[in-house]
Length: 162
Image (tube, rainbow, N blue to C red; front, side):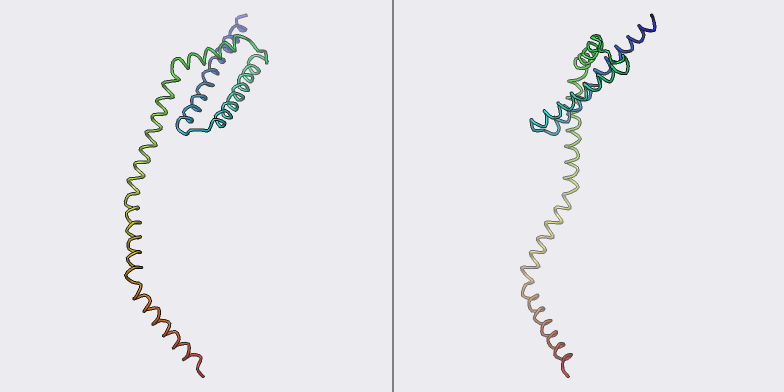
């Protein structure tokens, strides 16, 4: 009799833990949604996939630990675990993790901007230098090309002469 009660208590505690795990996964989904905004249809699709996976995990727990028998106290345990987690940690965790990740992203953007300043400066100078060369060196370049054409023409005539 005591073994049977231990088994039921373990099953109830497993149900509590599964309820907490399900909400932890959903909080991760909520954090991702706050950081990367989604279209409504994408959120709906994510929710459908999430709840299907949750239902599969619930039934797997019942199948493994209770021979597939659906017991009302296990469903109550899952709901209780979800409620405890949501009341105690969920909102704080989602807000703090979202804020932390957004700060990390802002820091990375600032560091990238600082690192890229010299690169941007060099690119702008290179464009200016290229513009300067094209603007002020057009005539000398044309003259050099003409002179090279004359030399080539002379060489060509000299080579083909018999």
